[in-house]
Length: 165
Image (cartoon, rainbow, N blue to C red; front, side, top):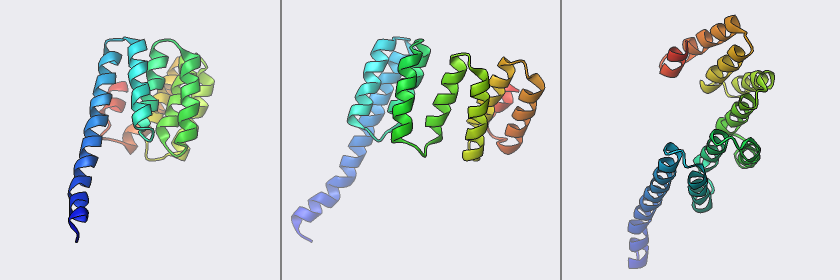
């Protein structure tokens, strides 16, 4: 092995670790603005995550959540579409669209979206939570309880489902 190859083999793992550290740092930085409810700053910071790490789903999903929390539902919807185009096999992209339907008060649409997500991604527990909340919002309390029970049976370690019950 040449010395150049040795250097590359030694520095590659370090470079990957530095990139991961940089991503973690950017995420933590964006979360700080989010938790302070400084929506404009959080949005700028999530944009930086997407710019530097375009394959990191969190840069898109957190931007949708930020926009939704800020009441900017059209911007959130546009970002959710971008996320879905970029990550068509990620359940989080579909979850965000369902949360947005609920945020817009389109609970019947949200119920249908959550059902479709449960069918497409059977190993995901979030659609049980979202579906139950949407059912409750439409007054379908027995159906919400049934759905939560099914989620708890399938995902007994997901405490969020238990606390929602």
